[in-house]
Image (cartoon, rainbow, N blue to C red; front, side):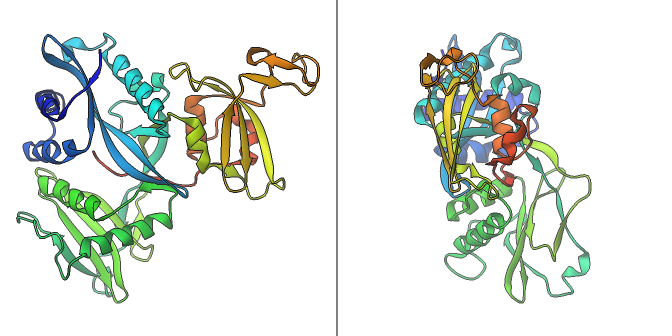
Length: 375
């Protein structure tokens, strides 16, 4: 049976990680197993004393509209080659989702090596990864300057340099402001987030630069890579940065786990005149029984909430009995019927499934997802 590993047992998974993810450098794996293992959970299947399959649940504090939720990012999803196609991953994912449901986690997300692995489990893409570049090299002759917080090849332990105590907190506040102005879903930055990011960059001989202009912080840019250097991030105002053409490949998949929690971030569109609308929603989720079936979904202009409809009270709808008569859910009509993956893609603002139809003119999905974390 799948089991959550204790801190000592989590270290036993390193051999499997290095065998499956051989592209990761030794220094990056050192970083991961010394830093990320401090607060994550590892679900694994052990047979004959050997870990045969695993998945790692790395927690992030995410901004989702006006809400702040602790959500798991799934990484390190792996099965030994000789054990593949025997249902190990299904056992892990279904056990994980059942545990998340008891915790009322609103959703989880991952960066898939292959989307086909996760589609049968209700995951769907919610985010396309944009690629940014500085508008021109002469931006720096026009008043933009760099201050290096982490330098390639150096120890990099003094993360509050340059300048003063609390510098990372100042950078985190700038990043949150930049993100909040553009997106509704993103990982909240703080000093701990920045310290961990700098350690991650350092593991791949990275650099992290603060871009400055005459007004103060104007952006941030980071590169990493031992064998091949690539840009890890670029956050800057539109006057300094632009999105590269043909960027925006699908990057992050997600799955709603607890819909009655998630919909708190959803509300009516501004153009809807009514103060409240009610949708009888039939949600198809064969993997999480608590989600499957009929819900009564209430929406106003601030938020929404859902309640299970074990029975429904009809209102003269065809094939649903007499007006005012209680019927079983199976006999009751609904306004909207969607699969959990369709529901997820729609409410994250990624796509509008055909099944949603005219309800997209009533319900305001989230606007803008930005999840560029690696692990």
